[in-house]
Image (cartoon, rainbow, N blue to C red; front, top):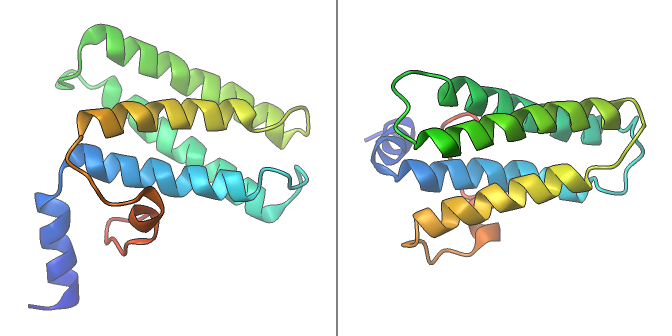
Length: 135
């Protein structure tokens, strides 16, 4: 079996919440690594855009009719996605920091981790694990 096929099999078999957690973790770590960077920093902008892309994708999924999450949770997460959008714009204009973004992402990660309790793998190890689904 080729490496690509192996990674595809893992992606198809892995718990979706664990995958979501990994994506949030990687992006959150990128934000944290650039926490003290000037708002004009290319690395910070990259982390901000990746975070915004994650939240825009999440919002699109939450607004789909077939989304199985409870309606109140969906509404709360959609609301958070708009807060992420507003705060990201402020940071990109040099009008604020990323603390709110970090807090939101960490809160979602806690929820995902609680939902996928089976993971004994350390968070940093998960963040660096090679995955084949675009993160």
